[in-house]
Image (cartoon, rainbow, N blue to C red; front, top):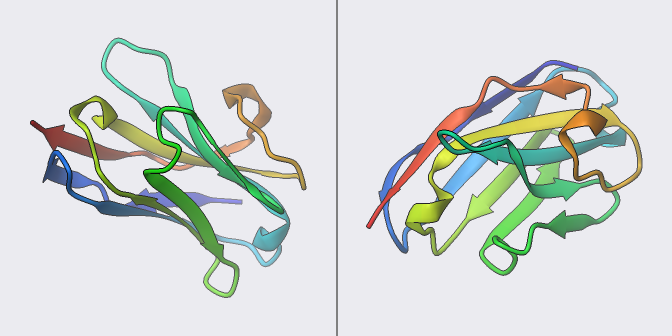
Length: 120
């Protein structure tokens, strides 16, 4: 599956953004999809994932919401109450799996990344 992430931008603390991850392929509904982020000088870290259910990193729980529209082959990441520490390049990833997966190595396909910058 090929992925394209978009929707990033420059916002102020407390604002919201919605990222989208658009996928090719007819069986996207069977894929687990995750969002990860990477800040300068740091490792790529898990943010959220969706399969049959959803799971979030503690740092975003209650502020971010992952969802999917299988009719559009798209997964969304709604980010509310953004903080400066959320600044990073955000990547979506997918793998054919019914499970919630939280590590980089478990995913097979990656999008190109979209920059999110939150100013204080």
